[in-house]
Length: 328
Image (cartoon, rainbow, N blue to C red; front, top):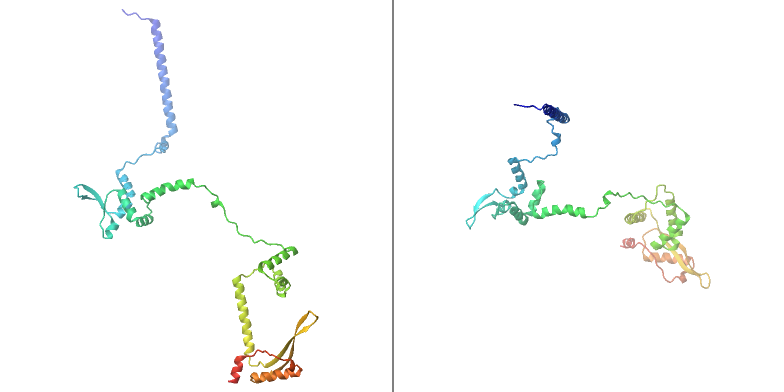
């Protein structure tokens, strides 16, 4: 006989209906969450996978890995032959390589087929050729010394104190223009006299005043010639003067004259003497002359001024080459 508790049955029904209602609500919330995720991802952007951009997938292709290994040992392949088996004296078989540079020199050299052993052999015998090959082929040197230098160079550079030299630019030199004033010019003149050892009366010389007058008329500054240019100008001026003198002496229409000048000392006071000079006379020489003819002309002139008894010594200048030519 079954006895049903109606109150309990009502409670159970209410509980089951409430649980069913809660389950329905949870399922609706889950569906809404999935729909929201689909809306955020976008049905048309499933192939973009933007949320996987930071994920790095390791390449497991064997061929790619082998190519990378071959690129790292490209220098070994350039200097050594392909590896082959060689039976040693102890009976063991080793994989070795032949050194191509040594083989070209006529000395066979087998090196164990190991990259480090090959690099040691290159560093010992073929370092210059290896570095040249690396430079020509844009290959990073794998020698132990070069690798160490590559690792320590950034550390040394970072340890050094930075400077601002790279940010500075040299400004062009601007000439300093000193304005004219009486005081400034006097100071410059005195400084020039002292530094060059000039006599004090040099400032009163006509050539100095002429130079200052010419410089005062300059409107765009004065260019002072250097030592080399000054020496060149002096030599050119001397050559021009000598050329003009030769033209005067070698002219066919030049007449010859014999001139006598007298020099004596005049006593102006008891302790003051003054040197005096004057032209005593001159005569024209119409033909070739020698020493005797010049002596006769001198005697006539000093006798004419009545000083023949006072003449003790005479000195003169004459064209010796012309006299030799006339007497020959």
